[in-house]
Image (cartoon, rainbow, N blue to C red):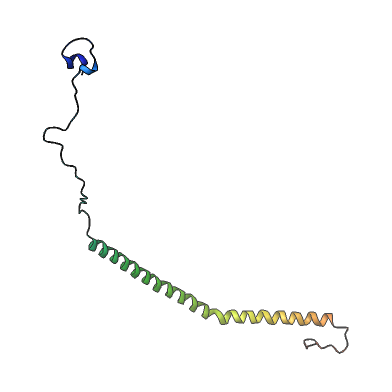
Length: 124
C-alpha cells in the first residue's frame, strides 16, 4: 500500500502524520492450537505382535531341532562307515609295517655283517 493511498492525498508527508496500522488477530480470534499428544491407534495390537513373534520363534526352534536330528543321523552314518572299514585299514597298515620291518632287518644285517656275534633283530 502506498503512502498516498493511506493519507488520501498526493505527495510526501511525515511519517508522524500517517495513521498507525498494526496486524492483529482476526475477529473471533485464532483457532485453538492442538498441543495435546494424540497418537493414532493404528496397526496390530501388542498381543498380536507378541503372538506373532512367539509363533515365529517356536517355528524356528522346531526347524533347528529337525536340522539337528538330520545332522546327527548323517554324523552317525559317517561314523558307522568308518567303524566298518577300520579292520581293513588296520590290516593294510599291519602289512605295510611288516614289510618295512623286514626291510629294516635286512639293512641291519647288511650293515653289521662284519661284526662278530651280532644277531640281527635282537636288542643291543
